[in-house]
Length: 376
Image 1 (tube, rainbow, N blue to C red):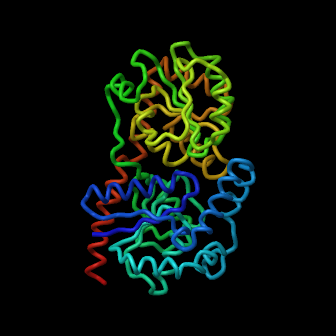
Image 2: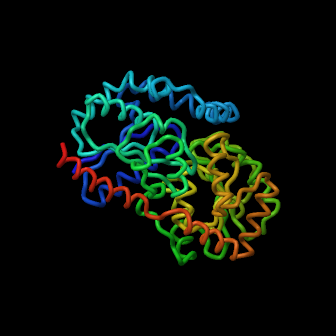
Image 3: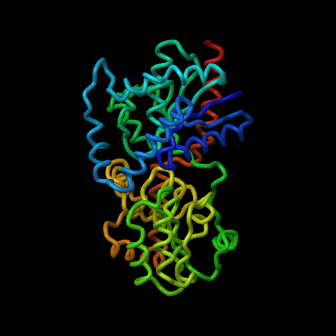
């Protein structure tokens, strides 16, 4: 069977979820390919939209938060928002691409392509089964514009909230957020450290700012260096933020205390080896930490989507969410000295967050595609 998965390359999370689902489909013996929905239509459109998003999040995150939160209250005309109307204008080009590829079913990890697919199926341009993947621990705007055959949600409580938001409850299936199916925890932490090129006899704290190296990573790391024991090595992953990486390098701190990395792929290799993970609360990065059973401290959320994620994580006890650098250092110190804190996090996660989402989604999509083929 053949599957198309659409994403939009704004940040790393949507692409990571799409690629995780594709990997699980391939593991199940299917053919699966991931495409940027705007790049398929017009490459310059993808570059412009994603470039503006990255600039806005890095330089004016407070403004992005205002736009994001306001998007829940956008007036609706004939049941749809103007964002849906914008996305349907170029959807015909996407239809031609889909008709050429002729997949058995289609998935999307981004709301824009979900709106496009909804428009195309409503107007008879495509007949394939279509499914959406939610990539955050909160209700994302505009999904009530869509009419997907199925939407995969991170938790049962979120499925209920999406139904109240106006998404058809029969289409909501709780699976968790998909991460690479090869990601699994390592019980032997010394082995994980060796495989990641780290010293077995040291404690390690990973500080990651996502693909953009966003947030106030530098001040957080500075504070950790002042407060943590000399035996603790901090690994700062700057993503594509070369300016931040150079700033760390100019600190002239011995590598035994601070190891500076740029874009690391796969990051899970380092996550698995570290005793504590400090990360922005993106849906994918947090879920990877959950799958790896690593204690998680979330910091510097982008206003809007990530601050909503942080609230969910805090309220459900699945991560620590300190607000200041001093509180971050205190939280890390407590985790390193008290294993019970990690045990409580793990127990809380098992109660509310499903594991193995990518394989569950792959199995479901294959089954639904076969059913749809019989109907069509």
